[in-house]
Amino acid sequence: MVDYPFLTSAPGKVILFGEHSAVYNKPAIAAALSLRTYLLVTKNDDPADEHIHLEFPDIGLSHKWKKSQLPWNLTTHEQGIPPASEELNAELVDGLTPLLTTISSPLHYTAAYCFLYLFVSLCNNSVESGVTFTVRSTLPIGAGLGSSASISVCLASGFAYIGGHIKEASLEKSSKIVKDSDECKFIDAWSYMGEKCIHGNPSGIDNAVATHGGAVMFQRMTNSMPSVRTSMRNLPSINLLLTNTKTPRRTADLVSNVARIVNDFPKTTGCILESLEAIAREAYNLMVRPFLDPESKQRLMELIRINHGLLVSLGVSHPNLERIKLYCDELKIGETKLTGAGGGGCAITLLHDDYDTEAYEKLLKKFDDNGFETFKTTLGGKGVGLLTKPQAELLEYMTVESFINFNDTNEIENSIGCGSIDSWKYW
Ligand SMILES: Nc1ncnc2c1ncn2[C@@H]1O[C@H](COP(=O)(O)OP(=O)(O)OP(=O)(O)O)[C@@H](O)[C@H]1O
Ligand SMILES: C[C@@](O)(CCO)CC(=O)[O-]
Ligand SMILES: [Mg+2]
Image 1: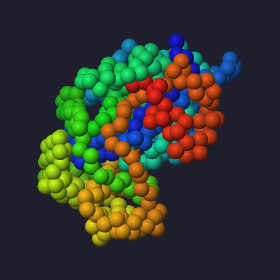
Image 2: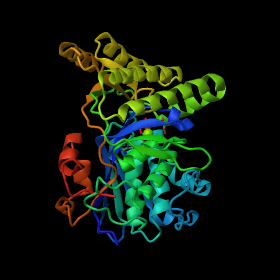
Image 3: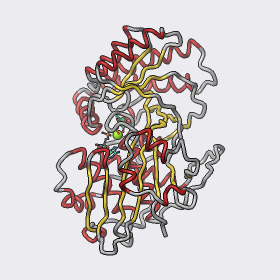
Image 4: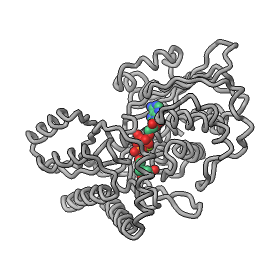
């Protein structure tokens, strides 16, 4: 029996090399961020409440469904982990459609669709009504930092916990554990289905990083083989600047546009995808060395520039991303590439060791003038976490209202954040 309220949390990610080519089964490198999404699960005391409530204030979405109206008969709850190749359950997708007709914005629709798909799949009909699922994120949403995967992981882990598919997380996840826990495998596989609801054809890299944390080289395989995730334990300390253009875009649109180009220009794009693979492999070899010597660092910088150029050729840049690159080039600050799906969202700049601090100040001013936002964050953080009552006193008085009313990301992080409360448990 689950003791309400409880919280789950998962990190965003930054892709260093290999976005988009990851969808075509090429290797890519990504690391978890310290920016995270948090899901609060509460139960009210009203016995007459027959609803399940969703509160997604970050995107302005509040909704509820009568529990008895959900298509419970369209799932098989014995199914456990879905195979890597599994498509969304078409009958369930059809069964959910009438429940989403009043939601018109695509941003809201995909979030609610992901919520319902995972909820009906993972919680069974005996789940209590009067439960509210409230999500807050310290990540920018739709900006290339894996917000969709981190919400999918929060939902999949929360529902799997309620549905009894996974057992309690433990307070100390030993850094010596090399094998993935069954719980993490379960959450990874189901959050992948959540990502499918949000953007159709995900590679699985974002949800893998949001589940397991750390830094990885990831490659999706063909023919139903499970993806390969190679942990990169001692990532060299690289000085990265993360800049958000704040230009909105949807990963789903960018991924489907690349699919069209790949289809229309198979030979040309085949070569581009192979080049992207070579870049990720060389970057991996450079980054797993114990020490990044100046020559290796220089090569890494050049790989960043080449990677960005190839992404431009696939049509996933944006004038604002090019502006970031232009300013960094002009002021000789470092090499820049877009990160995530592109089309807006964020860019990363690997800083030269000897960049001029005055030039750096000028750069920040230019970014500010353009309405861009820079982030300080650390790479390689923890994966999916759980906060439950006996350990966390704050849950005694945490309400949906207080959670929604956190003013900003600092307040969220300081009040409940994985970085500030050490009673978070990890699977
Ligand atoms: N905090 C949140 N609250 C509600 N919905 C969210 C939240 N975070 C993400 N989403 C859902 O995820 C969608 C954004 O996902 P999308 O894949 O387009 O961008 P991203 O994951 O931020 O970037 P990328 O996929 O390039 O890393 C939103 O439209 C919304 O449906
Ligand atoms: C664009 C993409 O490669 C990364 C999005 O963060 C899509 C994916 O791999 O699922
Ligand atoms: Mg996404």
